[in-house]
Length: 85
Image: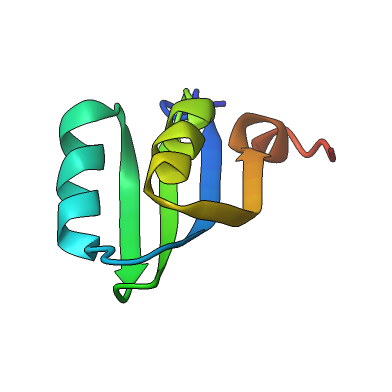
């Protein structure tokens, strides 16, 4: 079975003011290691989706921009092995 390069599928919503999906995308790309990045929304609400081995860093960054909620961190390695939880 192939090993997953980035183990955690990290998703969250950021609610704030003056949010910019392009700036957020650029910052995450430059400062965090991972792939499959999506940052979509408007100036008050952005949804982030990112595969990384350090999901807590993405959560900390999101919190620096506003309130974060609907946080999901899934272990894709466990999923690949057919395990739950």
